[in-house]
Image 1: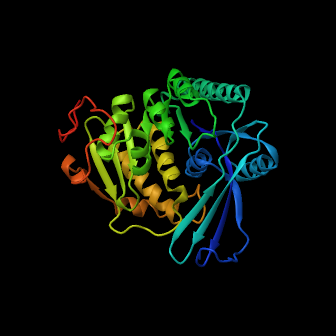
Image 2: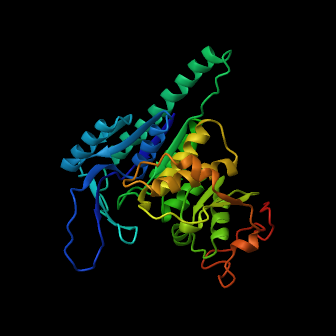
Image 3: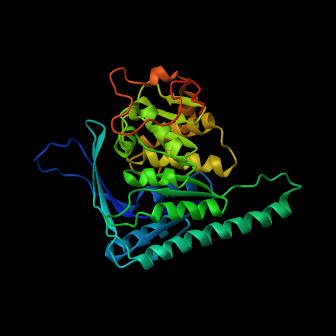
Length: 354
């Protein structure tokens, strides 16, 4: 099972307008409101593709009630934990003329220590139930050749202001203790804490990586996360595609022509792809990168986050997949390190061996 945790969920509001003009009044058709937050988007995509999922999130106030109602209607398996603070909202304005999206995110309200503890307990329970179910299935289905699914814990999205520094590391430790693959998609100091806690996979974009590590060079930034304890870095590079980086592998995947559309759920679709494959026991970086890049591109074609276009199979077949040399990834004018110390590795080795 894939267990997703959304520590700072939102009611996502999306409007499409012909063209955004700063300072002007815009008219649009009725907007769409749905349960959102990166972890819930991951769960939606994985569920739609037939993977067993459980989405965990907090909800509070009238917006929390709205989120819960929509999530029930969606059919995505979930468990929502009540908190006193009101659930935040996220607004996406899609400019149909330019083919891009402007997003405004409320910051959210920090739950109490007791409410965070309840969320952690829910994660432990969910992973424990998943392990018990797998053991029972293995016992009955060995003769049928059924592949054992590995539990996957996805920690995705921002943390509300004031969230405990140890929240993400404690969830990662709980996942590792349960034998789960742990995927974290976060930013800022939380990204470094996730690496230090030993998250299996981290999925930053280039800006998030530079901000968190203080390292201008994206390759050296990824190596810093590996040095801290992560095993695989999926690095989003927007129109330039995505990189998969481990201690001895670099793979890049991209489309020949970038797609225009709504990119707000592209990263979540990539995380969903990684989670689905890893739950099936597939850990080869190139296989994960191909699926993550194609699902990410297919998400851009959809009007709402949490969905991917059925054409993802065709997109995957059209990917340009490369194994670039280290020098091809380094901007010639960029300093190796902006503010971080040397990594204690040999990043000039094309195979990145430690």
